[in-house]
Image 1 (cartoon, helix red, strand yellow):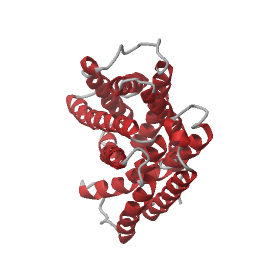
Image 2 (image 1 turned 90 degrees about the vertical axis):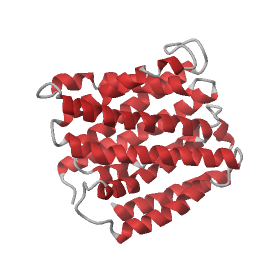
Image 3 (image 1 turned 180 degrees about the vertical axis):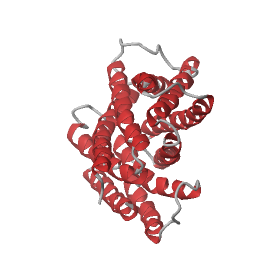
Image 4 (image 1 turned 30 degrees about the vertical axis):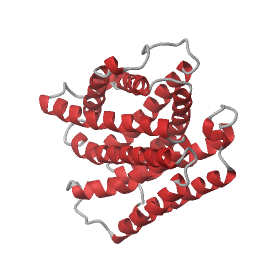
Length: 297
């Protein structure tokens, strides 16, 4: 039975999943209106980094060189994962990308064993879940709405992003509990902000522009993605239940499908016009993925 503190982590993850769904849809709308992907990544990461500045003063001391080094490494993984996520949103529908990110839960379980952070071997249920996940991915991503290549590209980028985030989630609890978790979060996301600033020469348009139709959407997406990342990072770093937290967080796939079905046409999203069959198939794939996740919970 989950402890009271574990339930705190699960509630954080559930709320993060809902906020992520709204942020992903806003990000997809911004990209459809012509906002640059690099700019979207930089804005989201800078907002997220600013949210963690208070953590430096809430911690019990100043970061050591070792903590800064570990934070920079983990921040680099987050930057890669976030960049892959926005690339996936550009290539595919949000209602396809978000459910596919649910494979994080299964990959976290694998990474915990591979990295030696778990004493238990991979149980048979996890292997069953991995096999069923392949079927779920096929249901969610095939046949393509924009053509086979585009669909495969979106699927590949989403899975690569999920793998990167899974690697991060499996490492954060291990390193954060060797020191002050609050200080480690500052090191991770402080370095993320610095690394994101280094990307500014490659931005497609003025970073803080507010004059074009997609600008409000990219700012909204940045704030929402940052907020959900704060909630999830807190749940991962401060509670030692990364697999279980990701199980709850996978609800973002359901939230995204439901929000697109409700708001897709109203927001004039390209995926708002997908067929009912596609919506049902994606929901079925998301449901199957949920069953896979429960197998490893």
